[in-house]
Length: 244
Image 1 (cartoon, one colour):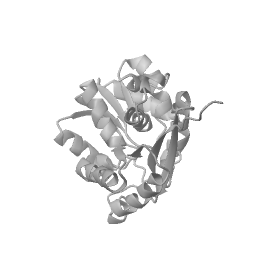
Image 2 (cartoon, rainbow, N blue to C red; image 1 turned 45 degrees about the vertical axis):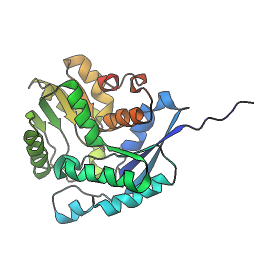
Image 3 (cartoon, rainbow, N blue to C red; image 1 turned 30 degrees about the vertical axis):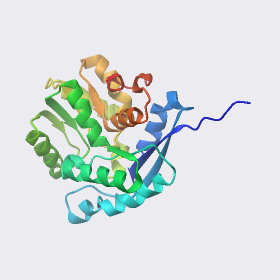
């Protein structure tokens, strides 16, 4: 009689109005169907701006409630699968990850932490930025990257306050933005939003322009697989990030 081996379990904290993370992550994790499972907890996020009401959506107490529900599933790591730290600051997010680990005993990471590690590994300093966000959000993101020593050589912003609406832009539209971004000759193209359909176009764009394309959903998958001891390079056809 064969013995059942429990899969490694990844927990993801997900904005409530996000409809991209789950289906795309499921597709990315197909090579790990027998060895890794992914579980989600949602907390309310219905719009993105710098208003006090919007910023309050990312209150740590609210997110921790969702993190504790994931901990009850005995997950091996918890990832905050969102990009708010890009405009609110990495210090806040690092504090959240520390709190998750302190209160649950489970390793924690985030999409923006994964971006930071990938960009460092690539040695990328000249970045192109593609998001669906408004100018107030985009300008805040650019200012934080510049303060960290990066040069933003191109940026695309769709002036959308979302969050649900971010998922309505088709992948081909995002591919067009990435091809245009390549004209500025960045070291890497960053698609920053976990409710944006950038993951499926990364490999095709990279083949055409020879520049790494880092998508938010993809980089979160890359990071969490590494945390549970799996090899992300088993994911093929979704871009060079999985070979980092």
